[in-house]
Length: 304
Image (cartoon, rainbow, N blue to C red; front, top):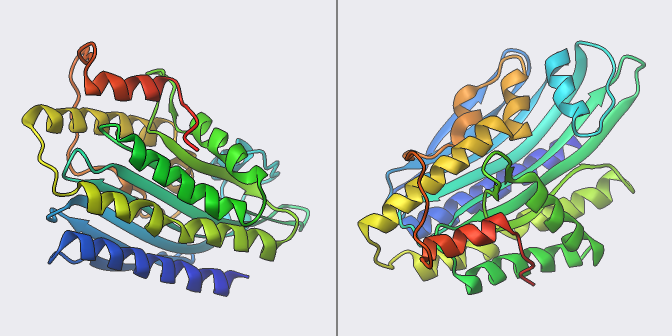
């Protein structure tokens, strides 16, 4: 299973990088191949200070080794009861976070991954996880509906229950609890998928990954030339601050990566924006477009 998955990851990475470069113009991704002495490695592609994208990262990793108790605990928090230390593991995934310059172009994130872990009794556990979510700075309802409909269509190919279930999971997971608001307008999120069999789950995950370009690139095309003000840019940077808070405080993928021996911190923290802003006690004006977005983040809604 590992090799075909790796090939698909690399293809998804190459296709998404190509689509982003076409939207940005002349700027190209920096390709950074890396290896870890404990086993495996990856390819990190980063575009910074582009015309359209302030920071865009697309990462593929395929790693193996022994799982310490701290990393195993991160898995247990997701429902996997793994006993013992130094457990043999294999993990492969493709992930991306795109931070545009224009406040009218949303940030997008996706991550699709596969894990295998052998417990101390010699039993091998495997599962898939991942998702795609959208973080706009200004609410364009047509864009959000398009994004969700594209994800729903991908899920519906494999069963009508998936989108509804994983949309709610996404809203619950990407929650900045101390702020009482979601990170964005959601999408889909799932973890611990291990039935009915590897191939069936793999095909579902592949459909979700294939939906990233058609769900996001049309929004970029529509919004990237829209003019914006200093105040709109300031709001964008404030919202990016919330993005940082979630990723560093709550995101389990970040925690798992940081707890894994031989972790490559540059790739793990690729999701952080180039620029962000924090203001003391900032509150958007009543009736403003900023307040409109905040209300949706505080109370998620159904879009399709």
